[in-house]
Amino acid sequence: MVSITFYGAINEIGGNKILIEGTETRVFLDFGLCFNRYGNYFSPYITPRQGLKLKDFIELKLLPDLEGLYRQDFEQRFRESSKEPLFDGVVLSHPHIDHAGFIPFIRSDIPFYASEGSLAILKAIEQTSQGFYEFLKLKEKFKIRESKREKGKYVRDKDSSVQREITTFKSSFKIGEFTFHPFSVDHSIVGATAYVIETSEGAVVYTGDIRFHGRKYDLSWKFVEEASKYDPILMITEGTRIHEQTTVTELQLEDNLKRIIKEISGLVVASFPVRDFDRMQSFVNAGKENGRELVISTRQAFALDVLEKEKIDDVPNLDEVRVFLPSKSWGIYDNPNYPIEIQMQDYSTWERKIIEKSSTITANEIREEQESYILRVEPTELKYLLDINPKIGSRYIRSLTEPVDEEMEIQQQKMDNWLKFFSLYPYKQLHCSGHTSRKELLEMINKINPKKIVPIHTENAKDFMSAFEKVMIVEEGVKITLK
Image (cartoon, rainbow, N blue to C red; front, side):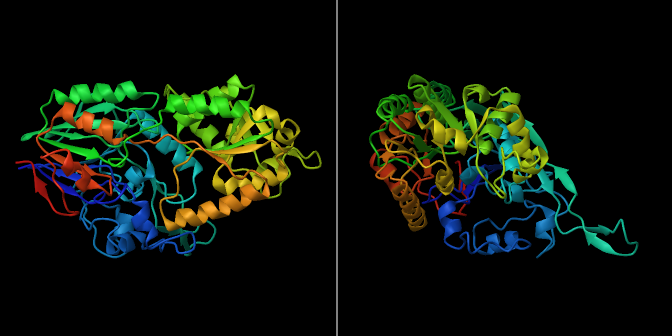
């Protein structure tokens, strides 16, 4: 008997954790963090207990209480841990945190499957981000060793690490009794993959997150065409925008950008998702048409460099952009009164590597030729504009989703205060969703024609029932069977 249990993404956006079980095989599809649920308990000011966060997340039902799944160093802090893994794999649809964010808790001896693009993004996140992002290499915690300086004394061992068992794919692969057929699809991040899973009781389709209006929309329709050939018994589909009828395409957004930027005489300041390289390409193209260069962060540049090394196509080249070096810590970069080795101590080791191989630019240089640049900033980086002082005629373009909860609204208010200070308010909102609209979602389902549908990654699952008779509204943690 084949069964499926959903441990997240039920009546919520994100947090996908889907367990598919056969006679002898147990595999998770994604293992993500739900931001809304996490935000019910934690904030930048209320953080998880570092040594007991696995225990706390299980207690708070942010993670399922399952044996043989979690890394032993954390699990042994509060209970006995299984000596052997009791799961056969974790298969990732794409590297957004709401699908991959809790993978660092998974045991290293449970095989991890991801597309080459997803793996490259996770590698960049792991190397450039602060926090618990041990996707590929697990740093073993709570270990001690004898001091190298004083015999008989012990210190905490911070150097021990274990490489996760990782498999990338370009074609079908097997995990136990299941055969996985991966299909690249269009989404707002590199590496997005949908799957058809062949089981002893029929095929299961899992869309992950998908859209049909980005630069790679043809990949999504190719997936639909191929998935329909398997006569699936069940389709697990995202439904983020089931209630939204219309969509701005990425190419329409790019055309709008070109038109808007043409009318701006000063600096263009912009925000867009840090790893949305389709959006980055839109800004690069709009900048080129208007005689401007896109200036990105060292973190984005590092990711581009990793993608280039991994030979991932369809992203901007590092030599198409400039890399912004903000005034950090001592604020002495490019100051002749300090040796270069002292200047560079303002930047992390990974940043120094990207600085050496990219075309960097400082706030002083941007200030002198504001009409020549598009400066991409995180909302938390608007403070760096104090060193640039945008001149009259400058404008801010916000290419992010609108706030959807109270915490995002508070952040937006602070952001608006900064924009008003720099006379960049009101701003231009211009966004293209990473998720498909109702029209294309229904067309996808009708063409694949599954016998049953489980809508997830949505707060409006019941909206599917007005369009289809075969909809199953499932409960979190409750096992369903294919037959």
